[in-house]
Image (cartoon, rainbow, N blue to C red; front, top):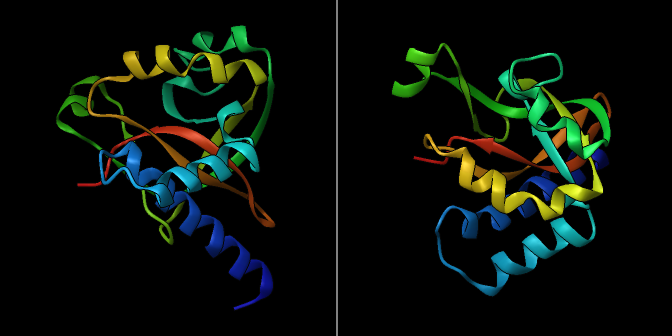
Length: 153
C-alpha cells in the first residue's frame, strides 16, 4: 500500500468516527473530535456532495443555486440502492461503504452552506441521514463533504 493510500485510509477512518454521532451512536469525545477535524481542517461544513435529482441540470438542483459556490466533480464510495420509497419515485440512494464502487457526485463548495444545514436536515426525510464522506478524484481523497445517504443498517 502506497503512502497516498495510507493517507486516504486515515481520512476514511476519521470520517467513520465522525459519523458515529450523526447516526445516533455513542456521543463520545472521539466522535466529536473527529467531526471537529472534518469541519475545521477539511472544511466539510462548506461542502455538499450531490447526486441524482440534486445534481446540476436535474429536477431539484434549483434548491442549491442560491448558495453560489464552486462545483467540482468527484466520486464517493458506496452502493446505489432502491428503498421502498425510492422504487415508487424512480430514485436510488447511496449507502456509503468504503472500498465499494466509485459513484460519481458533484460537490458544491459554498461558505453559506454551514448556515443552512438545519433546513436541509429537516427537509431530507425519507430515511436519509446527513453524513460525512471522503470525496475522491483521480489522485485519491480530495475533500470531505456532507452527503444525504442511507444510514447503516
